[in-house]
Image (cartoon, rainbow, N blue to C red; front, side, top):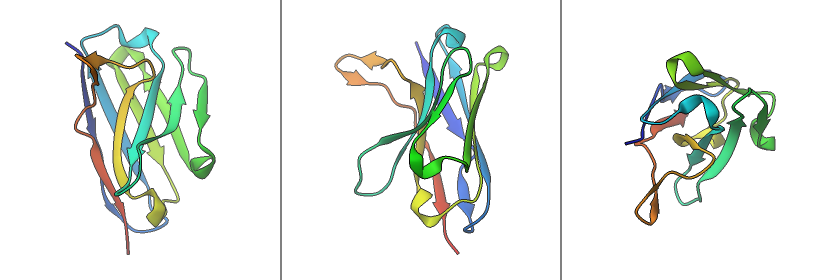
Length: 119
């Protein structure tokens, strides 16, 4: 049974930094591309950063130059370093495999971690 546990969110002032972690279990973690997604109130969930099994990364334009995704396959963990945070980055952040993990007809998601950027 796959499990994804996100942590590291919190309240931070504009311009601040946070580092999110995602611990994965229950599958062969290292062979999968992973991503960090976020969902702001009233908006659809979006993919903001992804990393391939060999470490190639991609970012949505709004976070390029500020966010860095990385992975430690030995620890089955994915990270998202977020710098120069803006109020628009406020959202619940989720990690997931890029290839969906299905539970019945629904895509599996962890509980997410709340990031709030506010003065």
